[in-house]
Image 1: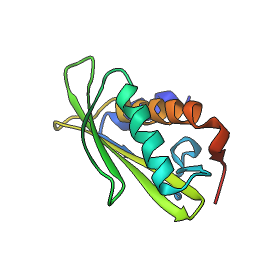
Image 2 (image 1 turned 45 degrees about the horizontal axis):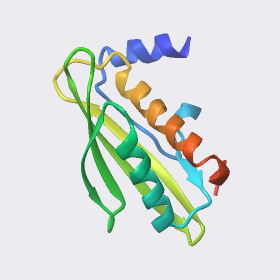
Image 3 (image 1 turned 180 degrees about the horizontal axis):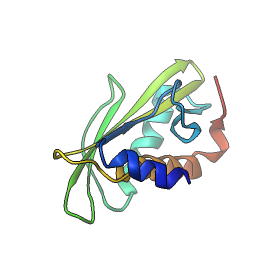
Length: 132
């Protein structure tokens, strides 16, 4: 049922984001036992290899990576992946995804975030931690 709910929400909303306070457990920040520098390297190299995503720019000093993705309907999604330093040995990754245009996204931003998290968690499985 959550996917149907997401699709219905997506009729009106054309963005999605993750964070510590997210009500949906799948949209909670993801934590890795890696320094910010190491997490940055791993995240950037993983995102560069993901099919269907185009890396537009990366700003290591603020920990942001900006991607673009085209949907099957031809819309463009702008995605910002943030690598945040929690402490010297732990980093968090948060994602903001928004569709260009005035209509809702039918849940595509939600699915995009889950896709990116799934890929990062697979690549960084040995460093994944549930909390800080």
